[in-house]
Each structure stands twice: as C-alpha cells, then as structure tokens.
Image 1 (tube, one colour):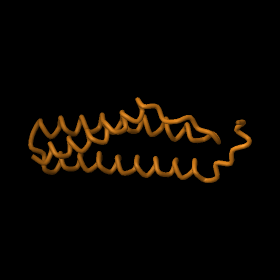
Image 2: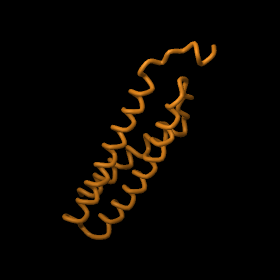
Image 3: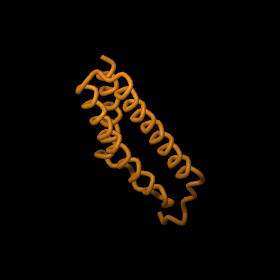
Length: 103
C-alpha cells in the first residue's frame, strides 16, 4: 500500500507530543536528583547516584530524539525492540537511583 493512500491524521503529532512530555518529565526527575544531591547530599554515594542519573537521562534523551525524528513521515517505522528496551531501562534506572539517593 503506498504512503499516499494512508491518512495518519494527527496520530504522528500526538505521538511526538507524548515523547516530548515524557522527555520533559525525565528531565525534571534528573534535575530534582541533582538538587537533592546538592542540598541533602550524603557524600560520594549521592554524587555517584546523580552521575548515573545523568547518564540514564542522556540515554533516554537519545532514544526520545530518535523516536521524535522518526515520526515526521506519514508512515513512521516501528520502534525497534532495542530502543524500547533502552527507554524502559533508563526509566527504571532513574527510579532506582532516586531511591538510592533517599537511603
């Protein structure tokens, strides 16, 4: 079926906006992690958790950027399993590092 026959409507735009909102949420979490380390830092463990949080955030930014740029066509290619696993791993890693900074 040719691309011209498909009318995606606003679905690609909604998906791009969802990725942007998720990236913004991830950014806020990373900033709050840095703030927690600066104001309530418990030593080198907090700094390590912040550094790992920044790495997880950068990994998520990369996946999100690739996904947003893929959504510009009328028929974007599906998200690869590797990208899906990376975004899930970065999200879980941010949660684990946040918990580590609290304890």
